[in-house]
Image (cartoon, rainbow, N blue to C red; front, side):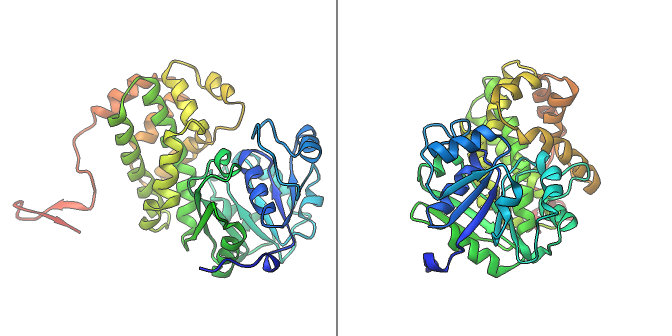
Length: 356
């Protein structure tokens, strides 16, 4: 596919959220000759980015592109920008969106990279944006896939997936983000990408606990595989395509989040496995751990859609019920025997297998 020429890209874009991923996205867009206005809540971060082109809190030892201008003003950030990238923790969304209601305008396209649900109703982010802002679903897009900011900002090979109800919007974003180190695919299943991005953090917590307990590769592989089955079951029940969970937003992001030292959810789980309390483990990260909130939301969604999610339930027992990780391992391993895939059933003659 031919990448759109720089003079066909928007002159300026807005990025809301100067954490590690928001800063990396701003840097990526700036390198494509777009003027990027980056919003941060913290004035010291704004000053450092504008004066030194660094964000040492979230991306230490990385020099940012000079086309990035940071500000604490949301209005300044979005004013005149046809594309607004939302890259904030899910817990911050209600406050951010309430502020944006005064500035949102009809031509604005909102692109989010938020891997979580919006409480108290466990809304997917795109649904929440439709409810709260004067935009229709054609003006919303989502970014997913295995993409640690620490690698993207250093121009290390990375793949992403973008989705939107609007095919044109998805292709435009593909052109805006593509480069010689960042390959971007499109996928029409925005529902699946949102769900996969939120739920993989729960499984990363679980894998981290296994590592903290001293378990080996067999356990990690089992948790990731069975965890992906849980994610897919709930996602399909919520309207997603099963194929999405075998793609970049599904298994791709799951692997990256479950095995990487960059992953806050993996590191938090490991500390829990080593005996820390939830409060201690989260504080040790110094940043938001999305998997904790996602676990609460996922349990409620699983109940609503009548989906069995034993690994998620085990993680919740550690996070919220005070159970020790080693206890819940025993509960998982002692569950009743079952088939690997619910689609495999024994024939009525009970003599052969068939796959449906």
